[in-house]
Length: 618
Ligand code: ADP
Ligand code: MG
Image 1 (cartoon, rainbow, N blue to C red):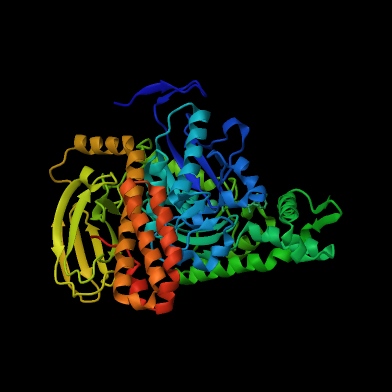
Image 2: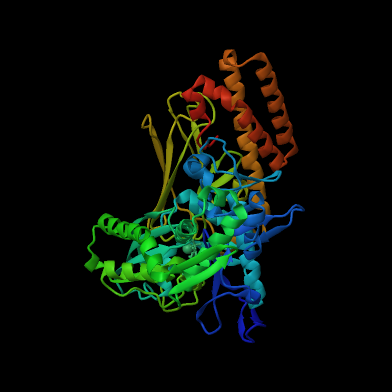
């Protein structure tokens, strides 16, 4: 059933619909594909460059810019320009509150464990939507450059990304109209780009050192039978090339006897200096002295001084390498290869110190800022079945998950996971004194469970009566090599437990699976927007429940006027929920949050703030 078409760009015949590999980076994103010569190739559409800065700008008329054009607005319009959104993907406000000042745009402080939102102008965006805008741009560039529809992709994430961050990345792909075949670890992709791990006979232990714009990580991978296992990761999510730029700027400020506070206050000059510093840093690849001026300010620096200045930062990354080895219980001699990833590994001192530490030459033959995307393209090619030499391991054809509030599907084992596999997540209750929890297990790719296939349903009974949000229910899925799925639910505070077994492939044909996959692609956009509306509505209803209960129980802590105001807010939220306008619901939730925040503080009631947290099933 594969359709054949002629690629207008290359003149060759190829199957329609190419699968691409995408590196969705904190600083830069890019897309790669396997060209008709069967080589991985990065896409450079219209000569605009391979790297697309991961920056999104919202214009006054609702126009959206992504990439270099958006980056210019970081200086002139920072409130409406979103950068580093990857740091927020799949995170809650609690996860990021320690570094909230890092963002120049507004991250909503709802003081909860639910996923963060960003406010730009009057609209609320989730990091998933913002990442989807970047992915859409990459998809469009790829389609334009290779004159072929792009509907399927492999997207990479750091090895340390947790389940929620991976799921958010998948959702972003879906929202961008991409069928995400697999989420792959960045170090795994980088190693594939170097051909490491392609031979199923080979057993190797490698270190992947990734120094990007604002983040650093090192991963130790063990490769066996074509399977990559992460033995250890280490790093610093606030260390990268940006630090080198800052160090240079500080040096120039000192050398020119300038007042740092004044420079920072002059945003435009500060940004000019930062850009000049980045230019100097890059120039050291082919010259040893940088000597320019911004107005009356001398921007002079030689390579030796630069290296002395950044030495402590690079030393920090070496310490991380040491720690990663220790965690993996390995010695330097046991590392077979070292792979360099990230634009900042172009700095000679970085390469030198890493090679010295590992006592061997490092892999730097490929462009370090392109390797991850190139490897993702190779992984995509393998999944497409285009590499007959590589055995495709047994994978789950459809995602497995459970029903959560509002009839949404919460995926626990994503499709295309290698079997055997396991996954799990923690849930809580939404109502005070809830003693039963219904657990409904589904299979499929749609966001609403009613569109998926039900596999099992059972009741976890005997949860001790507690306030909403207190019980901790772990749900674990275990899919064994015979395709049997064991679902276990356990309430951790009481130990109440229940287990069922099903065989997901029983009673479903290959054609039905294919149809379900097709439907999920055609409905992807509607599905995600429906999900977002349902999530907003559920959050709103949860908020009404919590605030009303608060007023009931603790009315004496709140003045009559405050009660009246709060009720007005609640009424307005109820209206918004009735209209089904997602942004309006979120706006009202945000307002209630702001308005009622002092009440909870006044009361210092742990129960209330705890009850506001956590994801509940029903
Ligand atoms: P990320 O993975 O964080 O999205 P990249 O891998 O694209 O980012 O790395 C971006 C960083 O690489 C920036 O700090 C940039 O200044 C730096 N960089 C790019 N080219 C060079 C170079 N020639 N020399 C030193 N640093 C470079
Ligand atoms: Mg990167």
